[in-house]
Length: 111
Image 1: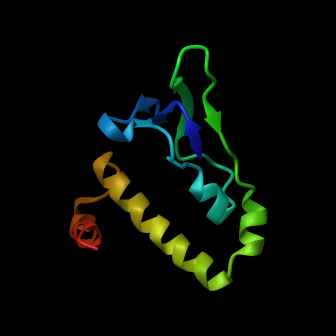
Image 2: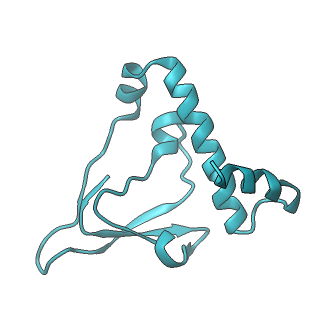
Image 3: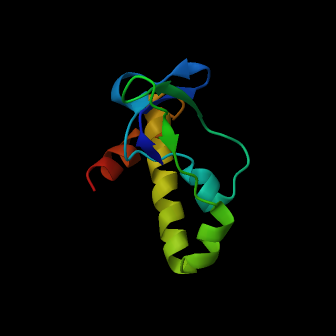
């Protein structure tokens, strides 16, 4: 989680466009690693801009195993399903999702 400053989001070697490419205070990333114990990154986060001159960018890390051990298994499954749905939407916007699944994404966005 970003608690101070901004980070840049890189996917497939390119900065994500617009508001999806920069994350600031309160933003979180790495949820797939925490929820699914994935070792492969879907994006790279790079320190981008401090909130003030000579001030560090501050990030906090949540240990995935500790999180999975503490959360109710039924809630973990719900979170995993939700994240998979969100990933489908991002893949659509990045052109990696088939046209056939656009309708499914539109339904998801109406939630």
